[in-house]
Image 1: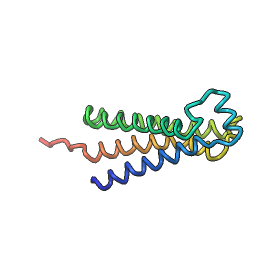
Image 2 (image 1 turned 60 degrees about the vertical axis):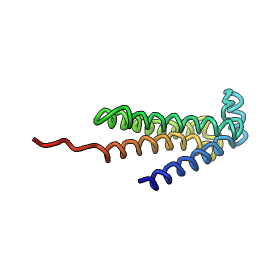
Image 3 (image 1 turned 90 degrees about the horizontal axis):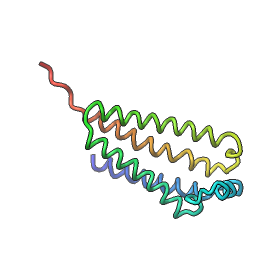
Image 4 (image 1 turned 135 degrees about the vertical axis):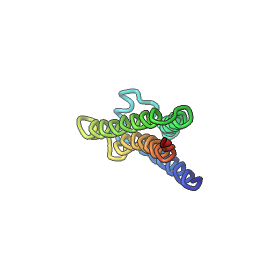
Amino acid sequence: MMRNDFFYYLLLLVLTVVDAWLLAHPNLIGQITIFWYDHDYLETLPKAMATVAVTVLVALLISLLIRRALSGSLAILLAVALLAICGYAVFQTYMRFSTGANQFMGSGFKTGAVLLPIILALIFGKTVLDLVATKKPKKRR
C-alpha cells in the first residue's frame, strides 16, 4: 500500500510540474491573452507552478478531510460529487479552448489548461476508490 502511495504522489508531482510548464509557455496569442485578461498568475513558470501546486494541495487536503472527517456513504457521495464536478470541468475546459479565440492559444497551453481538472479528477477518483475499498460491510443479524 505504501509503495502505491509513493507512486501516486510521484505521479501527482510530475503532472503538476508538467502542467505548470505548459501553462507558463503559451504561444504569442496566449501571451497577449494572459496580459490582456490580467492572468498574472500564469506569466512565469514559478507563478504557474505555485498556482497549480496550491490547487493540487487544496484538492489533496479536501480529499484527506473527506477520508478522515466523514464516514460511510456521506464520504463516498461527496467524493463522487467532486469527481463528477471535475469531469464536468474537464469537458468545459476542453470545449472552451476548442472554440473562439482560445483555440489559437497554442496546443501546449490548451493541454495544460485541460490537464489541471484531470489532475483534480485523479485525486478525487483515488479518494472514491480508497473509500469504497475500505468501506466496512454491514453485519448480518
